[in-house]
Amino acid sequence: VSLRDFTMNDYSSALPCFSGGLSLSALIAICTSCWYISSNFNAIASQVLFSKFDVNEQDVQTVLLAQLLTTSQLVLGTIFSITFFTCHRLIYGKTQGNSKKLIKKKVKVYDLIIGVLHYVGSMCTNMGFAYGSASLVQCVKLLEPIETLILMVLAIIVRDNIVSKSWDITKLEIQQIVSIRKVASTFIIIGGTTLLLTQKSMQPNPKSITFALVSGCCMASRNVLKKTTSSSNNSGMKGGQKEEESSHGAFVAGVQSFTFITTMAAIPAMAVTLLCYVRNFSPLNALVSSLLKSENGALEYLGRAVVFHCLYNVFSITVLSLTSATTHSLMNVGKRIVNV
Image (tube, rainbow, N blue to C red; front, side, top):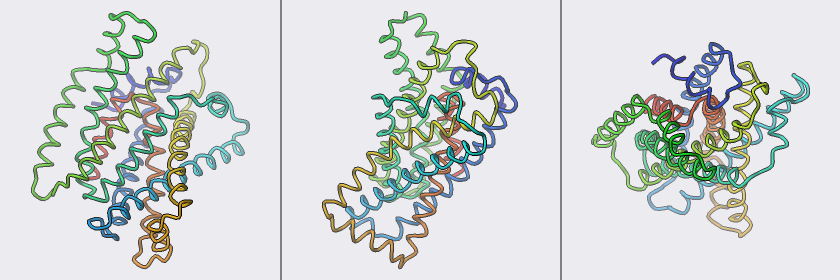
């Protein structure tokens, strides 16, 4: 399927203000490539980081290392996005359009839920890397499109019941999402994942598989909730209200979305880490001391995992803001195959 056909039908429902198909397709292609590459480096760095510690006998240390890594990743993402918008404001002048709306946006309940889902999903991904290979985690998370497809249908039904839409309209909306092509792709993914997991070289670990499945569910729920709520908000826009019409504006809008999600996720992550630190939790203090000494080179890989996690989430959420949740999940499959 050409990239143009793959994206044009999806971004129209997500951001109806775009009119430049070629420039938008090019932006999605560039962001997807950067997303794949940075995600690969993040997975490798996280895997090496956890290999520096004994995860079989030190379960508490493993959880604390995953918590410290997740918090660092989310906090750096927040710092990066704030720095980006500060530089953008200095270069391009006063923030306008959707940027201004996001700055003044009031935090709602579903924003907090999206943030918590992002935090739990990131935490579980890191726990999966700790107990199993990066390839195993990526193979299990290949099931994410199935979870996204089911959750998207349920979200539409619940949303339409709340606003009292007729079943005919709801059925039409579901038919637009659950296309034959996407359903066929989903079954191919199920078969491929099953074949990969049954390979002897994969060495499946129950803990790693469990954390990878929870991570996939959380990320799929985050994407569906974000697209469902943003679609509801966009439906109230007037036809003449066209903002961010360039590919540059599209990228800025994607980073705005990343800023809000990662900030909402960083809050609970920092709260949990600070709680452990304030209670003078000795395993955490010992872990931090070990990392700072960097006797086994763990600090270097911690830095790599944090930086590349920030980069791949910027590009991932930018692509999500320009496509539908189901399309994003299928593109996620491509990323995981590249990683494996």
